[in-house]
Structure formats: C-alpha cells, structure tokens
Length: 263
Ligand SMILES: CC(C)(COP(=O)(O)OP(=O)(O)OC[C@H]1O[C@@H](n2cnc3c(N)ncnc32)[C@H](O)[C@@H]1OP(=O)(O)O)[C@@H](O)C(=O)NCCC(=O)NCCS
Image (tube, rainbow, N blue to C red; front, side, top):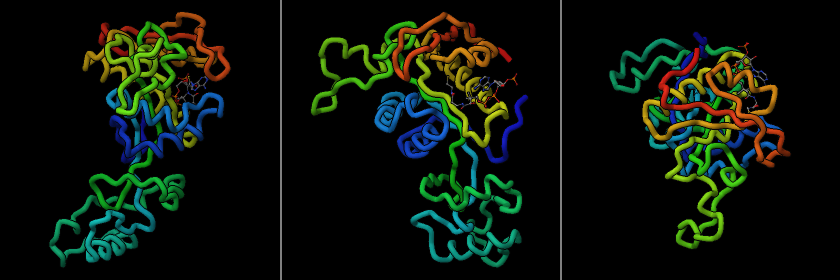
C-alpha cells in the first residue's frame, strides 16, 4: 500500500485548476512533449470527468486567511493561529473551530510552498489551499489507440460548435468514442518515486471502470516506461504512429470491462 503525504486528496480537475496543471506539466515534461495551455484548457473543458488531480493541502501565505469574503475578525484570528496552535475559546464562532491545520507539522518542501501564492485554489478551509502534485488527464478518442488527431483541438465555428470539415470529427475529445485516451500523467518531481503515479493511475482506472464510460483505456509510453504501465495491468500493443513529441511512442491499453486493477 502506498504511503501518501499528509492532507492528500484526489478529485477530478476543472478550469480552476488550469494554472496549476500547466505549471506542473512544464515542470515534469520536456518542452516537445507538453500539451500546453490551450490543449489543457480544451481537455478540461471537453471532458473534466476524465481527469484526476492529486492535491496536498497547504496553509495560505503566512497563515493569513485568503478567502475574499472573509471578515476582518476571521483574518485576525487566522493570523493569530498561524503563530499559535491554541484555540480561541473566547470567540465561540465557527471560525475558531476551523480544522487545526497545524503549521508546525509541515515538512520542509511544503513549508517552501507557502511563499508560492500565485495559484491559490481555496476550498473548504479559508486558511489553506490545494497544491496540485500529480494529475491524469484524458479524453475519449475515436479509434482504439491515440492518434495525432486525438491529441489535437477540433476546429470550431463562432458559436463554438465543432466544424464539419474533413477529419474534424476525429479531433480531440470524441464523446461517442469507446476508448479513454490518457494524454498526460505526471507527478511533481518533489514527490516522484513515492508511488503517487501508481496510486493516481490505479484510482483513475478504478473510477473509470465503475462509471462504465468506455470499454478501454489507452495511452502512449516511451520504451522505458512500459514496465510501469504493465505492472498496472496495461498491455503493450507495439509502436504508435503518433508523431507528437518527435514520435517513438508505444500504444498501451487496458480493458475496463474486467473491472479489476492489478496491484
Ligand atoms: C512517470 C511518473 C508519472 C511516475 O510517477 P511516480 O510516482 O514517480 O512513480 P511510482 O513511484 O508510482 O513508480 C512505480 C514504479 O515505476 C518505476 N518508474 C517510475 N518512473 C519511471 C521512469 N521514468 N522510467 C522507468 N521506471 C519508472 C519506479 O521505479 C517504480 O518501480 P518499482 O515499483 O519497481 O519501484 C513520474 O515519474 C513523472 O511524472 N514523470 C515525468 C512525466 C512522464 O514521463 N510521464 C509519463 C509519460 S508516458
């Protein structure tokens, strides 16, 4: 069983996560293998349910509350609690009972992230934000394996409808497709080698099996990555025709109808 970092959660990605997705991709992939902002935006728009993000919860900058509608009093209490873990027994308000995210429990690498406040995505706790540390992003493709068309963005008209030009029906996400194409999987370099890639991919496959959205999953892998995917139950179908990133890819696939993910 993988040991996860503290305060970790896995959930589908959305538009609000785009900046973090683009940033993490740029930290993990060489420039010729990056999808880039526009393709990531398209994929998160077309099929957010075919994505997964793994996050760790980290405190906001200097422990201040960063929620826009937070009252001055809350800000003050949040500030106080950053330097002290004792509770504010006098207030009796719900803000005094916010989860005791003990800043003293942070390890070195998370503590450094406190300064990195340009990608805030606050959810439940106004004193914390989610930092993306791994993701899987997919769409559905027309064929059994990923093609360059599957990796492209379809042409759309002024109303945003897909144009009926030659081959455009095979570009990007194909809602009627029976194959989920995983276009990206990555783990923050600070967290690699901790089985997080294994964990998020296994979780993704499990979710896709349960939701019965397609019959199979496919992805592209370089030669050295094939054992990683085979250990998770993927089969190697040999060389891909995809030219993206300079080519040299292999098609890996897995049936979703077996319903089980290899340990
Ligand atoms: C590939 C990646 C997602 C793996 O995530 P991770 O959390 O570091 O991997 P895990 O800790 O789950 O590793 C599981 C196994 O795969 C192996 N593995 C991981 N990355 C590998 C790599 N790049 N090449 C070969 N083997 C690798 C590990 O050694 C480990 O083997 P073990 O079980 O025998 O110890 C991550 O390294 C990454 O983001 N790389 C950069 C982006 C990338 O290449 N994505 C894949 C494109 S096909």
